[in-house]
Length: 499
Ligand SMILES: Nc1ncnc2c1ncn2[C@@H]1O[C@H](COP(=O)(O)OP(=O)(O)OP(=O)(O)O)[C@@H](O)[C@H]1O
Ligand SMILES: [Mg+2]
Image (cartoon, rainbow, N blue to C red; front, side, top):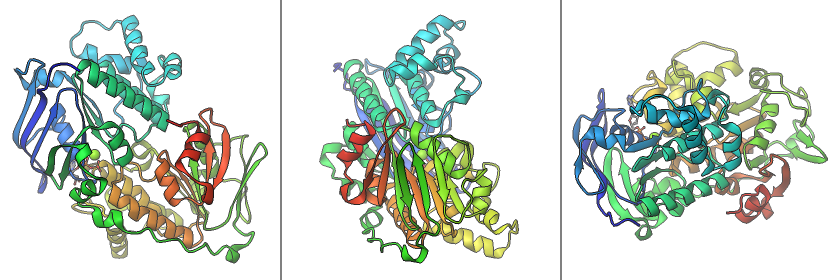
């Protein structure tokens, strides 16, 4: 630990409005040198806005920001920001450049002279190796546009780690990572904070991770600071959730699901998935969890929704096409899909909220009609998912990250479907709303929909699934666990991600 105990950044009385919407209403926030500081709050509380203002990518209306150097001297804002690196909630990489170029470029854009390729490759390799050595060995010359969401996330984190920043702001960096990668990232952060006095701000909606990594926390609620720097150890989960204003939702008992009415559809509508001697059969109403590193689940899901053909899987649906030829065909035949890549494949950025929410319904109904009835339907769905928006005609980019995720969920809620395939459906959704989503999806299952639910958050799978198909880190099926045998240890063991 360095001797420094000063503050890397201090924010006082920050205000920010977008049009008539007041987003930050006098936020105080400060980060000490060498600490890992959890910045917490529900969806739309103002966390990402605060981060954008600290990094200078948005401007404040009022309030002050002070950056200090290691000797506790005040820096100018421009100087201070040069020592800040950020991992944004949505990936911000340049797709036509390679992994190495993406990681090293910020150095050169800051005036370090001509691009030195050899140096760049060395830097990028060292930074990526901290999280995943084999990925670092393989990927330096790949174009970033060809990476999966999860690989892109590792590149973003490596870019921040390689930047030489004294303050790193991580806005939900683990949302696309596996448990093993998250654990590696955490140990790198712990080491750097202790050895170099790096300060880290960590935003997450996963309570378990927050406890693992952060020593201090601040909470904002509705644009105001409600906890300003308190030790994590002194705050219970209940106290944190209460301060975020979500206690009643989070404590709502998830009702035991009535056993799905399987008799109604004996043999009918059953989905069978086979791979090398493994056979899983899904009856209507069953929630099948999928766990493990993305390589395995991705091929299964792509096959199920008709996004890609794979020789590996044999899928048969009683009374249905053996295989869908495209996600569109799947949707029209009653199979829903929520993509895990909300910003590139999910959200329709140039269409208003109402079109985003009703997209699947219109496809299923074969109608493009927008009438008054649709507005009511849209508002009902937004209310069910607690979507905070000024108007249904606003564009999705005026919504917070977790709120955009809710738009994708709303698309399939209550749409009668036989199968619903979910890729990390609660990514970035706050603790209170997550519980409500579990409840809503369970209701869909109870009405006879088969659900396939891929999640990297094991606690979520434990809470919602009837059985879980686990993949190991090589992408192979490691086994199926039935609900009565489902424990966190068992999942960690089968997925090869025991910490
Ligand atoms: N460009 C914009 N125009 C209008 N409103 C905006 C804009 N950007 C953000 N907002 C509003 O500001 C509020 C705070 O958003 P912000 O993204 O900071 O929330 P957050 O705490 O990061 O939430 P999440 O946990 O969902 O990521 C939200 O209500 C959002 O709708
Ligand atoms: Mg955010």
